[in-house]
Amino acid sequence: PSPLGPTPKLVIDLERLASLPKEKAGALARYAATIQSQRGDYNGKVLSIRQEDLRSLAVIYDKSPSELTEELISWGVLDAEARRAVEAF
Ligand code: C2E
Ligand code: C2E
Ligand code: C2E
Image (tube, rainbow, N blue to C red; front, side, top):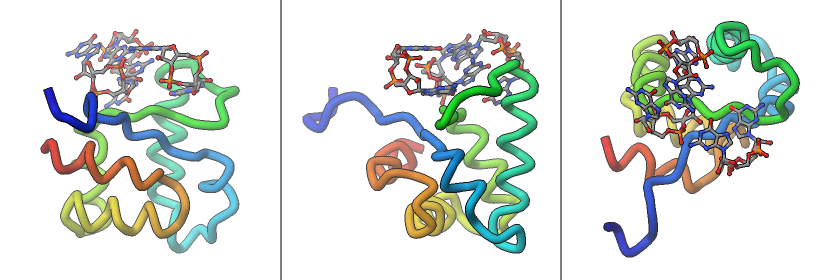
C-alpha cells in the first residue's frame, strides 16, 4: 500500500460548483447533475465521482485528466488531495 494511505476519492464541491460562471463550469455542472439524478442523490453538498468520470470529463474539456484536475483544484471544486487520485490512473 502507498505510504500516503489509500487512493483518495474525487469529491466535487457542489456549492462551489454552483457559484462558478456557466462558461467555465457548465459542462461539469451538467455532468454532476446527471450523476445525482441517476443515483437519486439530490441533497448532498458534495458528490463523490468515479475515476472513469474524470477521464470522460477530460475529453469534454479537451484536456488531459491531470490538466483538468489542476483546473478544478484552482476553481476550488476539487481538493488538492485529488491529485493523488489522478496519479493512480
Ligand atoms: P450501475 O453502474 O449498474 O450500478 C448499480 C448500483 O451499484 C449503483 O446504484 C450503486 O448502488 C452500486 N455501485 C456501482 N458502482 C459503485 C461504486 O463505485 N461505489 C458505490 N458506492 N456503489 C456503486 P446507483 O447508485 O443507484 O446508480 C444507478 C446507476 O446510475 C449506475 O448503475 C450507473 O449506471 C449510474 N451512475 C450512478 N453514479 C454514477 C457515477 O458516478 N458515474 C457513472 N458513470 N454512472 C453512475
Ligand atoms: P466519506 O466518503 O469521507 O464521506 C464523508 C461525507 O461526505 C458523507 O457522510 C456524505 O455526507 C458526504 N459525501 C461524500 N460523497 C458523497 C456523495 O457522492 N453524495 C452525497 N450526497 N454525499 C456525499 P456519510 O454519508 O455519513 O458517510 C460517512 C462515511 O461512510 C463516508 O465517508 C464513507 O467512508 C462511508 N460511506 C458512505 N457511503 C458510502 C458508499 O457509498 N461507499 C463507500 N465505500 N463508503 C461509503
Ligand atoms: P466507493 O464506493 O468507496 O468505491 C471505491 C472504488 O471501489 C470505486 O472507485 C470502484 O473502483 C470500486 N467499486 C465500488 N463499488 C463497485 C461496484 O459496485 N462495481 C464496480 N465495478 N466497482 C466498484 P470509483 O469507481 O472511482 O468510484 C469512486 C467513488 O464514487 C465511490 O467510492 C462512490 O463514493 C462513488 N460512486 C461511483 N459510482 C457510484 C454509483 O454508481 N453509485 C453511487 N452511489 N456512488 C458511486
